[in-house]
Image (cartoon, rainbow, N blue to C red; front, side):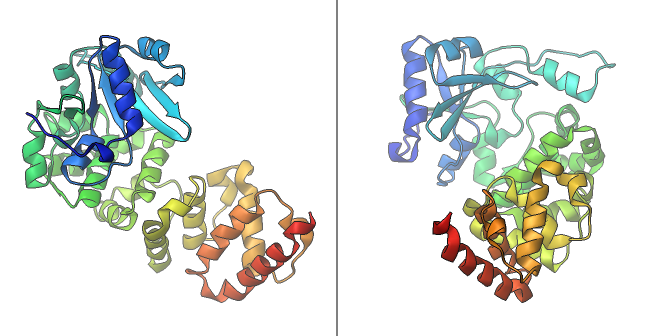
Amino acid sequence: MKVEFDKDLISPFALFIIKKLKKKGHNAFLVGGSVRDLLLKIVPRDWDIATDANPYKIKSIFKNAYIIGKRYKLVHIYFGKNKIEVSTFRRDPGPLPENLSPTEKLILSNKKYGTQEEDSRRRDFTINSLYYDPLNFDLIDYNGGLEDIKNRIIRTIGDPFERFKEDPVRIIRACALSCRLNFKIEEETGKAINLLKNELILIPEARIKEEILRILKSGSSFKTLKLLEDKKILKIIFPFPYNFNKNFEKALKIFDGDFKNFLDEEYFIFLFFASNLNLKFEKYFGKNLIFYKNLLEKILFSKKMDKKTIKYKNFYNVLRIGIKLVKIFPNCKKNILNWKTFYFSNRKKF
C-alpha cells in the first residue's frame, strides 16, 4: 500500500539512517508508534527503525551508534540530543523450557533474528506493528493494524493471554495507549488484562518505573493512572504507597500541562511530596537524592534563608520543583517567593 506523508513531519535523522542502511544493501523501515502517530496525524515523539542488519553491522555503519540492552540488543544512534532506536528483525523462537523465569524467557524469546513478517508477529499490538518506507512510500501491515487504527481499537497480536504472559508490562502499555489515543481496549484483550494483572509482580522494579515514567511524561498521566487505579493495577506497580486523593490528582494534572519542564528524576519526587510527606524518603529514592528532600523541605517550610543553601549546585532545580508545588500547597507560596527573590538577588555574588 502506498501512503505519502509530509516529509517535514518525519525526522531527518530517521530518514538519514534509512537511506544509509539501504545504500549498504539492507532493508530498513520506520516501525511502531511513529507510523501509528503519522496515520493519526499526531507528530511522533519517538522514532524507531527496524532493519535486517544485525546490531553489530549497524554499529559498524554509524560511528554515533551504541549497542544497548540486557534483554536483547538494540542500537541507539545519537544526533546531538536526538536519539533514534534501531532494532533487528526478530522471530518467535518456539517453545521455551518451563523452568525459566519470566525474565529469562523474555531474553531468549528476543534473541532469534528473522524476517520482517516474523518480526511483526513479535510486536505487542496491531497498531504498533506497521512498517513504513519513507523513501518508497510503502506502508506494510501484516496484522490488521490499519483497520484497528480506523476503528480506534487496542488489540494484541495473537492470543492476548499468551502475549501478556510473555511480557506482563504490555498490560500497562495497553492501558496507557488507550488513554493517550482515546482508543477502546478490545474485549478479549481487556479480559486478559483483568485476569493477568497480578503477573506484574514478577517484573523488575526498574522496568516498572520506566513504564510509569513514560506515562508521567505522556501528557495523559491523570487519565492513565486513573484507569490503572480503577483496574486495581496501580497498587501493584506504583513504587511507593500513595493515596489517589486531590493532591495526587493535582500533581498528575500539573504534569499533563507542563511535562516538558520536568527532569526525569523530578516526577516521582514531585508526586512523593504532593501525596505524602510522612513516608521515609530514602526507602524509595535512596541516599543519593536525599538532598532533594532536605532542600525542598527547607524552601517550603523554613523562613530562614542563607547563602550556603542557595550555593548548592542543584538548588535552582529544587527551587523549580518548589515553585510547582505551590499549586498544591498554596500556603507555602510566600516562602517560595522569598527564596526565589533571595536566590536571584545573591547568585551573582558567588
